[in-house]
Length: 258
Ligand code: WAQ
Ligand code: MG
Image (cartoon, rainbow, N blue to C red; front, top):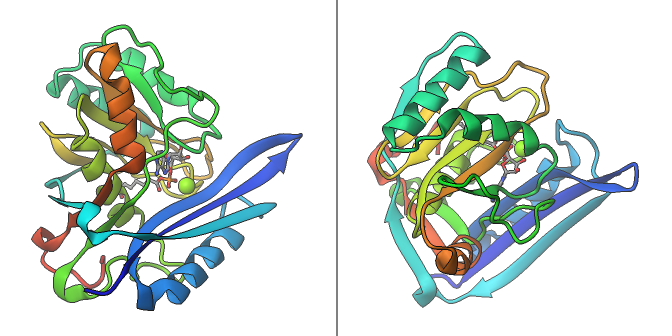
C-alpha cells in the first residue's frame, strides 16, 4: 500500500475582530494524491459560498497505516419533507426513536452553533455542554471514505471535491462508532445546502431533505453524550485523534456520488 497521509484544511474570516469559520475538511490519502488533494481543498476554501477567507491553513501529516481503524458506513434512509419546520419535527422524532428524551430542548440548541468550527458535545441527561472550548467545539479529524474500485475515495464531487453527503456520511459513521455517543444532529452552515441529518448506531444515517431555508448560513453539529463524566476525555480523544477509514462499498460504487 502507498504511504498514507492525513490532509486537513481550515479557512477563517476575521469579522469584527472575531474568528469565523468558513470551511474545513479532512482527508486520508496516498502519497501520490497529495498535490491534487491540496489543490482541491485550496479551491474549496477560496471560492466558498460563506465568503472569502482571510486565513487558509493546510496541514499534511504522514500517518501509520497500522493506526487506521476500518468501519462500515452507516445504512442510509432519506426522509422527504417540504418545510424546515416539518424537518425539525422529524429530527426530534428520530432522536426519540434513538432513546433521547429531551429531544426538543436539544433541537433548540442547534441555534447556538453558529460560527463554530467544531461540534457541541451535549450530555443528553443534564443538557450540559462538555466541550473544553465552547467557541470552537470538538472537531472530528483523521477520517475519510474508501470506495474500493472507485479508486481514491472522495476525489469525486464538484470541482472543489465537495460532496456534502459523502463527507457527512464519513463523519457520522466515525461519530456513531465513538464510545458514549448516542446520536448526532447536523445542519450544514452552507447557505444553499438545506438537507441535514440525524445519525446514530440505532437509527443509521437519516437524511432530512429540509432543515433550514435556502440562503440561511446558520448550521452546526451536536454530538449527544450518554455516560460518565470521567469518560468524556476518551470520547473526545477518539473523535479528534483516532484514524478511521469508512468503507463505502455498500453503496455499490456509485461513481456519481463517490
Ligand atoms: N467536526 C466537528 N464538527 C464539524 C466538522 C468536524 N470535522 N465539520 C463541520 N462541523 C460542524 C461545524 O460547526 C460546521 O459549521 C457544521 O458542522 C456544518 O458543517 O445527507 O456540509 O461542512 O445530504 O457545512 C449534511 C449532508 C452536510 C446531508 C453537512 O456540514 C446529506 C455539511 P458543513
Ligand atoms: Mg460548511
